[in-house]
Every structure is written in C-alpha cells, then in structure tokens.
Length: 222
Image (cartoon, rainbow, N blue to C red; front, top):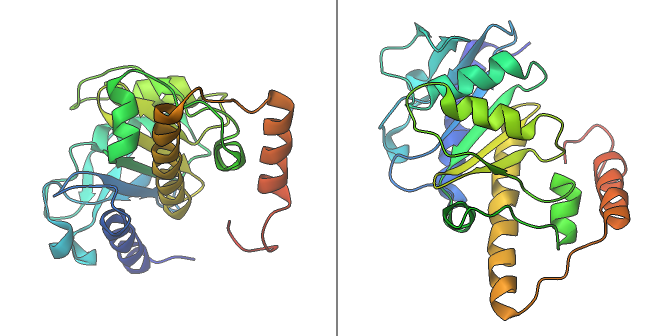
C-alpha cells in the first residue's frame, strides 16, 4: 500500500521529470495520479517553478476537482484531469505537456501518422488529433476522453494546444509523453525529407502485440 507521503514524493519527482526530459517550459505542464481510494487524485500546484517543487506542495483533489488537501491552488488543468478520471475508470495517471514537436503537430491540426516501429509499439497506430477547447473547465477533458475512448493510443494531440497522455499510473503516463515527443520529432524530420511511408495495419498490429505482451522482463514495467 502506497502512503500519501510516498505518493507526494513520486508525483513531485515525476513532475520534475517533465523538465528533465525537455517536455515543459517555465511552469507549464503537469502530472497527476489517482489515489488508491479511487475517489481522489494528486496533482502539482499551479504556477510553481519546477526547481522549487516540493512533495509537501502536491495537492489532493476529489474527482470534481475540489481541493481536499493542500495549501496552494492546484494546477489550472485540474478540471481536465478530474473529468478524465471520472470517465475513464481504468486510468490512474495523466500528464499534460506543451512539448515542442508534438505541439507543432497540433498547430497544423494533424495527427501523427504511424510510420515508425516505435509508434506502433507504444501507441498501436497514429497519435490522434483531438478538438480545440479553452482551458478552465472540463471541455478539454471531454475532448481527451472522446478522442481516446476505443483508441489504442495513450496520447492525444489537442488542437492548437499540446499533449495529454494517460496510463495505468503516473509513471506510465509520463513514459507516453516522452515517447510521444520522440515520435513527433522524428516524424517532423521525416516529412521534411520527403513522402512519409506508413506501416501497414497488419504489421502495426503485430508490433503492438509483441511490445505490449512479449517485450521486456516479466513483472517489470516497460
């Protein structure tokens, strides 16, 4: 059983990891994880520099976005996270970034096509494009849920905005964000070189199945 103190340290460190992987600038971006009670989640505070983040500053909110524990205001994306947790019961981790290459794809309103084995492995196909929505309420959350429901991808590109990723926990969601940016960068370079050659669906299915079910060590997260 994970204590709230342990989770505070985990979520604080994972938020700092966003900066370490070059996925955020200044105070943008956020990581959250659902608590074991299933009825609340932990997220970073709004507008605090990553260099100054402390585990004690992490905020616990209920699934309506109401603060349950914490002295600081929660992330401005709290309502988005809350909506996703309410409507995707199997999801326990969420990440939001404005990472450069992935955000560039959102600016041209384009999904990222599946032309790399890394994309097939991690996302099971293209990284889809979600709708434009203003921040502040649950509109972005609705767009994320609508786009990813029934989709293999754990990442979505929200038009003119950035990336949201989901996972079985916060660590998995951070990994998805890292891989999304990696694929976005390589595919951006590829399209400047010539016509992108997509992987056929049968091969995508085989790659995804192998990576999800065979790759790596048993009992160790990919």
